[in-house]
Image (cartoon, rainbow, N blue to C red; front, top):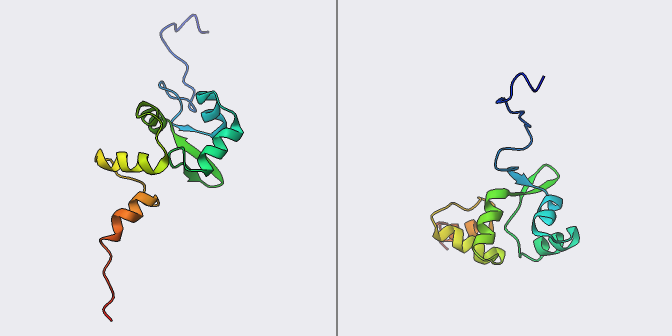
Length: 110
């Protein structure tokens, strides 16, 4: 059947032409050639970009990991500052977003 349509490509809905959009800890470990334990330790110590939490799953955006590597793999706080400086919005639940919004809160009058 494949011979009849040589130009037609099969599409795997889980993988896009540039690769997956989201990476699990196992995917990230494979990509960085590190152990799964090292990835978990790096995440817990703030040495990886902030992951997305979807249900009980933890995932990293593949494009963010590539940009993070291009920037020299800084720690999470430095990466968040770099992202804010580039005009890209930080996630609403990130520490950087909370710090940015501190100046916007109204003070209670005593």
